[in-house]
Image (cartoon, rainbow, N blue to C red; front, side):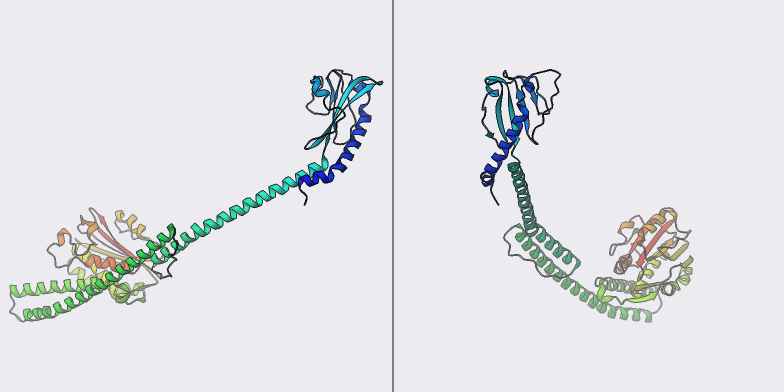
Amino acid sequence: MYSLKNIDSRYQLEEHVAVLSYVEEAEEALSNPELYEYETDSNQSIELPAGVSATLYTPDGLVTFTSDENGGIGFHRSLDIVYQDLYELRRLSDRYMYKQPVFAGSTEIVGIYELSIPREIWNEEVEVRQMYAVMLFASILIMLYAGLLWAVQRKLITPLTDLTIQMTNYAKGERSGSIETHRSDEFGRLYQHFEQMKTDIDQARAELASEQQKKEQMMASLSHDLKTPLTAIRTYSEAMPENKYAQTIQRKAEEMQVLIDDLHAFSMLERVSESFLWAEVDIEELFEMILSDYEVWGSSFDLSYTVKILAEGSIKVDVKQMQRAVNNLMSNAVRFAESHVFAVVVEDENRLPASLFPEAVDAVRSQQRGGGMQMIIQNDGVVAADNDRLFEPFYQGEKEQFSTHSGLGLSIVKKIAEAHGGDIILIPCPGQGTVASLWIPKL
């Protein structure tokens, strides 16, 4: 590949010869003295070699013809410029220029013509070189851009992606290998902090699990230790002569037994995977079994009791825990009802019963997530003023301050619902009653 300087030297003779032939050809066409007579309405046409342009001047510098499309005919140019470089073939960067006078006779100048002859070979090579230069520049830019992308990918995106994956896996509880911490930049320090955070959290979790295990052992031991003397107290109180003191002892022993049972159940729910026995059961059969005894129990409180089971299909539950949750909800509903308790089991796709309090419809529907079942319990009792706190452990409303209940019933229901992937809500309906809705996903 030749440089521009080599090309200039290589083609100089060939180009010079070609230009001279153009000059000779143009000289024949421009030797007519009449071409140099200026006429305002003149529209001359001169045949010149292809690519060659010409400008004709009178001896005093008036332009009588030009190949330039922009015109200029009828204008005077400086005589110094017009008569400069006569008979000299000047080579410019993209063309050759040549001036020559035209004579009438042997001495009288009638005009001067100036030729502009393009350097075709040179121009073509220059265009090729320009194209190569543009391609080379574009290639360099592409390489720089690719290098920049690679550097950003290696130094920024890849470390961030790795850290994101590690954080996501750790948040899900999935164990994965440690990321590199030998880097000395900001990401290296960030990795070190993340690994230290994982270590601290794992230690905290281990300590929490150990404390939880100790608490459960303590609760189990306490429950066992209390049941033994409690059984003796109940036995001796039943053997005592029937009087108000014996009745008080028996009643308080029963309260103590309820508290111990609820406390033990609440502590066991802290470790779902170990305490739950999962089974796939038919929804209709499950709730018929759980709710069958409440009609008799409700009549003992002078309450009307209605049950409807509209859901079908199967559900995966711990039967014992589900029975405990429903029993706690029904006991609350019966205990606070004035005259009526209504319980219905529906699927998300079912229409809600018409007897449901209108104020509770929107909240019940918003609880549905699709593919689940709801047990809705409604009573016409007093609406709790502190509804938001009723799921807190050991919390009792104003009406329960002197009751025989531990304040753990609704907390236990909430834990059981969440362990099954569902939830529980209480909907106060002032002037009407309260609605409890337990939602559990189906299989």
